Image (cartoon, rainbow, N blue to C red):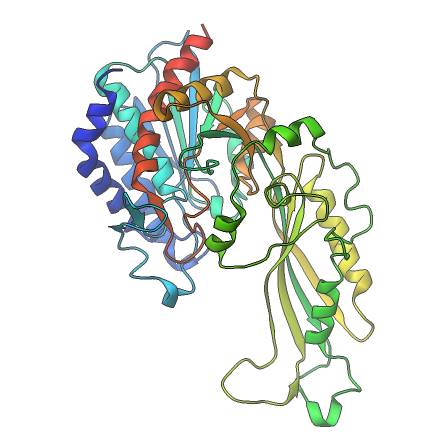
Length: 462
């Protein structure tokens, strides 16, 4: 593939123009007002895949937002790679913190990306990373270098938990059959530290409503005598961690698979700059579970976080009330050995037990995902590592990820195949936040790495 790098150089402007057209569609899966945008995005991806030479492509119903399926078969005796990605994006709030319209992408040189970065919702997560695969496939077909069969599954519900995709995969496991699943929806250890992510944390997500009196009460008449749901909610949630930063729920850690000292030592070899880390997130101090490093706390250990909390009067000026109810959203990141269904039941029971007398709890689990690990001895991992080294000029390292991709464990459950997490994002890319961005260098290097993955994987599977 001697012409690969030059092909990318010759087509950079067109590639970015196509991606920008996709980024301009506000495909926010969490908001029902954008239902038409979901179909618009799916159909735009379908048109592109048909244009670049897939044998078959269709927009398929999932029970929620649609998914795009496509395939290219060159020889049934060759291995098949299933490329997974998602076209849906997160909401843009708070809008006032964006430099410009979140759905009008532009390129800007930044401190972290002096070579330029794409600014816009979905630039990295996951339209930018997903589109690298489409462009890499385009090159392989045009150049006649495609060494194996390829299928695409690009969905529209990842940002809301892929709730309909398990049934979809189970129902369509025959057409989705493959030898390996390839995903770019994760981060690398660093811009000059190529890595393959070997694990993901799982997820449990809850919405809580704590009710007290039958209406908002005058705080002068009732304050000090009737329980305040907002104060009670704060006390309940603050009790969920102990003084050492561990999650304070009975039996929560039962079954957790501890990472060996040897593997922790290997992980510690990945460069980590605590000063840059703190500067990136705008803090001067970090904390968490005692006995673990910052990187370990957000990859190999569980985490419980309040994602939102509200209640009472929050308008301008004063309103002296005792609120009738309080609300909170809580997420728990899970590690191998933890089952989200069991954790859901455990958390719900615990919250009900610690709710004080005089209150009523309503709690529901709204999302869930299993944790995932893939071995570094797998042929697809080896192929990904070699592909990265071809482009970055140095050996790749294995890392664990702190996020969740609910569909990844589904592929293993229903298709019986492992997933390779070949992501090119960086921890400075502000995904899910205002001014989401994606390095131009990482975007184009991703387009270059992916064809080499196919090459090395096909060779290893012979």
